[in-house]
Image: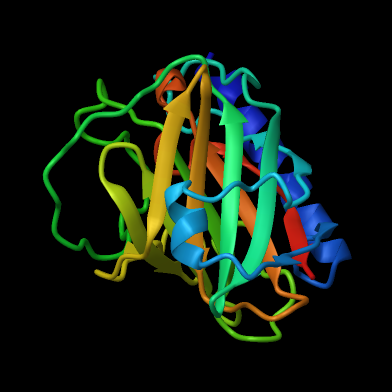
Length: 240
């Protein structure tokens, strides 16, 4: 069993590496995401006081990472599609992410201090692995004009910013410059989440990103023991 999982992981890495090589070392971009300019205050869209119905929805296919640890169960594709709406207002870009999830994995936990980047050579499971929570994130290049950095959390030449929301701890702004370098910045951002009728809806308030900025999305399903790099993820999409 361990050998089969190791082969699966290596094969996945080789496929991603081959795709990146064909793209000049970068990951391929997906569909264009048109942002709708609105006069509605950002606070109203963020809180849910204003409707998002006038903003077109983009359906984005999600991929599943292979098991990361020997103790991981097979990761079924329970969340195949993510609905994304994007609006520009009040000098901000607001992103609404919605996805179906039959279980609401969320609790209220105390805040935790900032932690240094990952330095272990071999990944091990997160502590208290009997507690897993739903989460979502939007990732984009830190440098304006940067085109499709590595999907594995950017790289040294093209670092990324990650707007991460967790159903237990709320929003956290993170940064990374390659696999294993993700760290909290200590900053936060405005976000709003709601779970209703088997679906999550989370709204992120991002900076006023320029047209052409690549965006990538991720979702963690707590009931599938998702954490760290075990997640659902999209290819890069292009903001317009």
